[in-house]
Image (tube, rainbow, N blue to C red):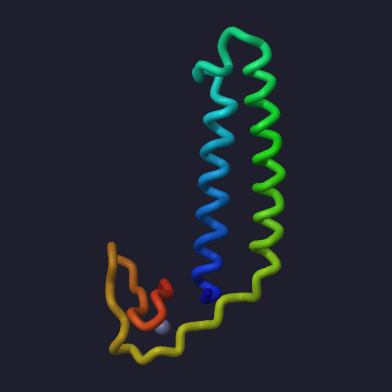
Length: 93
Ligand SMILES: [Zn+2]
């Protein structure tokens, strides 16, 4: 697995876990209405996810910095107004 793929995967996992956590804590959701037990369960799960998120963020910091793209300019292309390299898929300034 390449390093930039690792970055993307970890960031994706964080985003997903944060979205799930928000859903669990959303007062409008069924599990947060009525039975106290389901509310407690949702809160417990959200806490569990928060631990995962913290851990993933620590992991992200431990990853070595991404190597700068050294591909020739011919490989540069624009996507959604942003330059990126077709050789390594890295976003360029
Ligand atoms: Zn490149």
